[in-house]
Every structure is written in structure tokens, then in C-alpha cells.
Length: 607
Image (cartoon, rainbow, N blue to C red; front, side, top):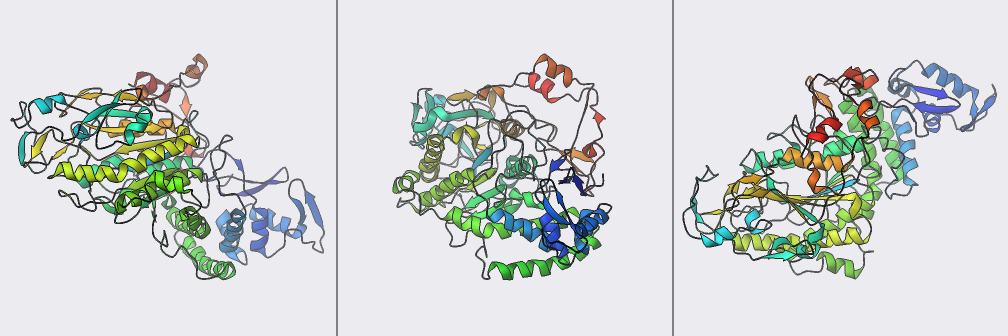
């Protein structure tokens, strides 16, 4: 069947979805009314030639059936271009249908949304949403979640081990942490005095003390943490999640980046939120949480009727351009972005209106604080909860600068000097809001299905830079996860007695995202996109799931192992660089090369 064809199947319209999104045939959203609108024919109009009742559709004009029969041999876009009102009218009919729906998150127990690349998850998902709290600039692990008494004992003395080259090579002596650690929660997880509120939710945190990164510079580190590659041009983790799983709310993007106050993108810019070579609709959408307009021009100046007319007018040009570009996938994605933007005009203002939240909720998140940066970050955390409630797949939060110790707008945690004051101020900004977010999600029953990831691009050295700062340390640092099926109150891995190098269970950013995708029900080795001659993935050719930080681990039955043996063919999805589907994505199969492994085999061998 030709890709995109519309058929009558048992009296109901069946739409073959683009094969890069799925290899299954799904019952389409109601398309006949949209086609009737595009043809200038009312749904129940009786023509002189008579009419016919189709099961599940209703009375339909013979004239319309003749048009549909004629359209069967035509690609969908070409058919719509030939209609009197064009693609815009059909699209607008679909757009209007969403406005009457409940904007709450959809139930995906029966499968993934229509915009998902996967037909279904590879295994049952523990989480459905991700909140990424990115601490841009590099938080010092030895001052936050990895206490080192040896630093206190040797404070002021030369480092007794070889010092690797640092960013500025202005290396001083061993520097003890100016913050006191305390065993917190029933688990006894050590957390420093920087984070007194996070101590109250210590039993929800799975602290990973053995993270590493191959880069030691901010922009490269930011790209690596977001995309798995140290340079721009690759999709962000948020884009991958939105691509694979879709969004549960068609009125909002699947990937949202929240900013407030003076927050700006980290070094690397908006490319950190890029869709890369994935369809354009998966790029991160930046929402200014505390601005009158969270997105510029989100509040329409015209009524719906005028907007419809303008969209229909513009689409006549879009249809011509699509034809001239041979139905380029990126052009079509741009058109779909306009559709989403139209629906966001009502969804975004409703999302950002927090006047209905209780006074206690405002206080819990720190919105009433005299600390403007804390209040601004608190608003982001509150909106993150509201986005989860509305079904957005991936949400990223942005820190605000305190302009202390070289920590600028793009790298506010970067205290190359005055670390005690700078880290103390930054922690005060995020501590209460993050603890409130965890507690609020838990009391609403949302924490179990929401994975929270807290991380910076690298750690900081156990010795000073100058007299009272710390330089970058990529050889061992701490991140943590909470909710989403992770084992709260646990600690994974270890650094040496100085907090300098990892000595136990070293892990990589690939492992972090492999674990996050696993909790979303995705085998990270099978979420790929055909680009430049290869199947690219978020974890490149690396990554192991960190199973010891998870509550449960799916075990393969004997039947499953037999079914997914290495000699069996599998399906591989994805688009080629030209936008055409690979043979496997069209329903054909290909064998796994010897030694390539499969998810069950890799999982059994992973840490």
C-alpha cells in the first residue's frame, strides 16, 4: 500500500501512518469530515446521485465516495492539494477537533500517541515523563553529595597524587569542603548543608557518585550531557524522548524548556535543545515561565475565523512549496509546527496561570520568597508539575545566575573563585523548589511515573583554583535521579578518597540516558534514526542500563529468549537522510549481525 494512502476498510477510514513513526496500521483520527470540508461537501449532504450509510461513519454522498475512490491511487498530500480549500482546511478541521477535548494527559495503556515513532514501548514503562534539572556550570560533588573527610585532614597541603591538566591550570592545595554533611532520611544518604530541604526527600534520591565525561569545557560538556556528542547538530535527549514516545497532549509540545527571570541557555545556546536531524516538531520549545507571554505572540490578536482564513491562505503557498521540494519531510514538519502553535494559543496561557494554585503550594515552592531567583526557579518547578499533569513528555529546567565567582548567566554554578558564597547562593535558589517538586509529585501520585534527573556537565576539583575556587573535574562527579522507578535512598559507585577519580562502578552519560530510556520503556539500542548512512541513537554505540539503581529489573522468560534469539530478524525504524523509509521500516526485516547483540542479551550482561 502506498505510504499515506487513505482506504475504506470495513466502512471505516484506515490511514497508513508514516512508516518512520510506526510499522503498524492504526485506525486513523476521523479524516472523512476533514476530506469533505476540503472538497466543499458537507458530511451528511445528500446528492442527486443518492447516498449510502457506512458502518461507523454515517450517511455519505455517492459523490464523495467517487472522489475517495479516485483518491485511492493518489498520495495523500497530492489529493489534498487538488481540493478546493487545500491542506489548510483539512488541517484546521483537525485542529478544531482538539479544542473540545480535555487537555489532561491521555491514557497510553492501549499504546503510544499517534505522533510517536514507536508503535509501543519495548517493555512496560516505569515512567512516562522526565524532568531534567540541569545545573549548568558544574556543581562540586565534594561539596554536595560525595563527602571526603580526607580533604579536611589534608586541607592546605599539596595534592598527594598527580594532578591532571585543568581548564586554567591555576592549581592550588587540597581544599576541604566549607559545607557540613549530614546523614539524611532513613537511608542515611549524606547530603551537605547546601541542600537542607533536599535532606527531607533523601529517601527518594538515587545518588550516582561515579559519573564521568570525556570533555572538560562548558559548551562541549553541555552538548555531551544533552545529546551524547560534544558538538552541535545532534538531537537532544528531550527530542529523542518526544520522537520515540510522542506527546500525550496534542495541545502542547512533547519537549518543553522552562526559563524564568534572567535564565538563558547554557553555553552552546539553543542548539542544546535541538531536534538535530529528527523531525523539526521535536525541538525543545522554550517557555518563559514568568513573562506575560510565555512564548512570543502566543496570544492571538485576531479571532478564530480570521486565523483560519489566514492559515488556509498560507497553506496554498505551502502546498506549492511542498510540491516543489518533492514533499520534503522538514517542510511538512514546519507545517505541523504551525498546527501545534495554533493549539498552544489556549493551552499555554492556561498552563502558566497559577492563580488557581493554593497559597500553601506557592509557599512550598518558594514563590513568596524575597529571593527573586528562588521564586523564579520555584515557578519553573511548579510549571514542571503542571506540564507533567498535562502529559508533556520531557521538561528541562534552567538555573538563574547569581554572578558569583565566574558563574555567569550561561554557567551559574561555575565557581572558579569564591566557591562557598557562590555555591551557597545557587543551592539556596534550587534547594527548596526541587524538594517541593519531589514532595508535590509524590503526594499527587505522579512521582512514580515521573523520572527526575539532576546533573551538571561535570564536577569540580578537590584542590583549589587560586585560593577559594575549584576548577572543572570530568574524572568523577555526582548526579542523582528520583521517582520513575529508581531505588530511592541508594548510592551507586564511588570516587577515591579525594573525590578526584572514579574507583568503583564508573559510568558514563551514555549509561545515564540508557537508564532513563529504559525507565520510559525503551531499549536504547533500538530507538534509532537513519541519518547519513547509519542508524544513529542517543547513546551512540555505547551505554548500559544502571540496573542497581532501579527498583525492579525485567527478566526475560524462556519463551522470550527463544523468540528474540540472535538469529531472529528484527524491525528497525527510521528515515534515511532523504526522508524515505528504510526497507526494514516499511515492514521488511533484516538479521542482526553476528555479535551485535539484542536488548535481552545486552541487559543480561549490563551492570
